[in-house]
Length: 308
Length: 313
Image (tube, rainbow over all chains, first blue to last red; front, side, top):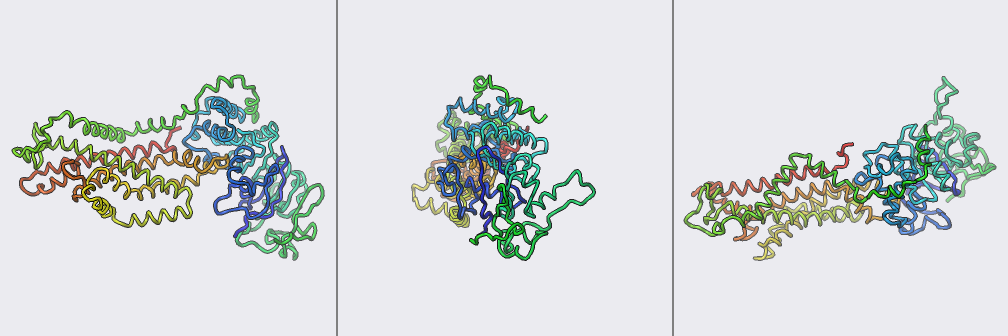
């Protein structure tokens, strides 16, 4: 058995935005899919709880989950080009989720669809609802995906790399749109990305993940101003700077370990510039460093994680 | 200018009522688009028209032609094609043209009905195997493999023979062709469903709360229609040929029912032997060729028409 994600302790406040950062393959998406219980067939949740308004989603029945998906918790995917069904109009696809959860009359459903199109900033909403996905640009399709995700006024929106496939100007528009809609509905957002710029702009709290583990957690200011974990420091150092010219870009050497072949102790130790003899012994516990800034690193205290 | 779009969304919605006038369900122009694309496929349109004409001729033609042409006329056996008998007469002196039209009723009906049996069986098995995968997929596909490993014509003969005299009726032949042909269709549909299942819009549908049945019917099926259409048309052609082959082997529909394959079988003896009537084999053969070719052309056009990626912007 491979543990793709292990010991992720996170909290999300109503109206808050939590950023989930890490390299490719560090378990960000698996974490998100677990919340909606949409893991692929090969994966399952072996332990832990996912509390949502007093209900534990980790053990909820499939029917209960279907009631929650797209309704109380919805999700936006990375690929707007392929996340829409090519054989139905985009309006019809927004209507589908409304029919599934809200039980409005056909007429109310239709005006709700146009309303949603208007809300996500699609021009000529009453005309665009009749378009097929292939007739819309990537940015417009992502707006449709957001319209689908928001049609039932969810309390939580999980956005898995929502802007990765879009060009930068569209990216900024989409992020601005998400923020605007969040303010309006007091919706909480889990934003998954490897783009630290997006995190800095959007998130209030940030969780840094490495190889399926949470290594650092704090407010966006804490993470960006005083990063503690060497991995976080490495990530921030590898952002190209406009000020420091003429120096090669800093990188983190090596790659994320394969989940089947994890190093002993701290998973980051083999790539860590500040590793010492304690690191390969056991995975460090998450230690509070004041003001809710947590880090799992022996540089800040010698406490190992209780072995499972 | 990032905020332009948002400012628009900030607008009140004074015309919300007015906008509710459009009809989502009526606006589903997908099938309209498919139809338009099909009409642009010239070969498919011609093939479709030929099939339509052929069907009409087979079902209406015999009513209009003289009834005595069905009666044996031993003074006029093996008459070569002429103005009276444009396709000549057969070994019993019956008019071949009228018989070909009557045989067409049987051959076309067998083709279409056997296709329906095949598509329903194969489609269901293929879709379930492809969608649910795992053990169901393994079991059904290995079963399919083992059926594919047995020559179909022998199984067909076995089934038909097991019915005795009743085996030579259209119902038995249709069912026999249907239950032996589904593995091919199941294979095609399974692989199509397998690839659609992995598409992101399926995951997106799941994330918005759709269940398996809804995903299968609403998202998988419409996207699989193109390949299903191709499989269906190919199966019609295939079933017509199978029925002909069965008749040719003497396991098809018994006399006096005419079918193209049966007529080929009757004419077979006199292609190279006296009284030399190759036309008696030529015409039914041509009809089989024409019908099978046309349904395949039509299938080709349908596949292109149903491919959503081929819609122009």
